[in-house]
Length: 42
Picture 1 (cartoon, rainbow, N blue to C red):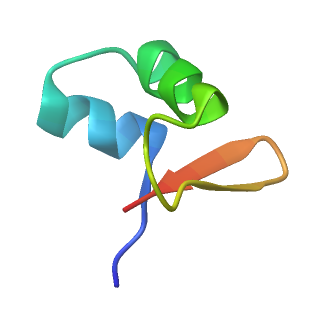
Picture 2 (cartoon, rainbow, N blue to C red):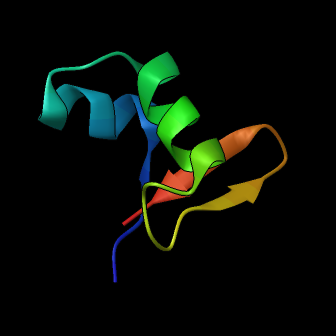
């Protein structure tokens, strides 16, 4: 499985990386993991 950073996912979803990060924190994106300061999403 391929994990994308919030910046990469924001380009696909036409949103901001900040918004994607908020969705990760809220648990709205399943299988999101955090390594250091970076979120990785599937």
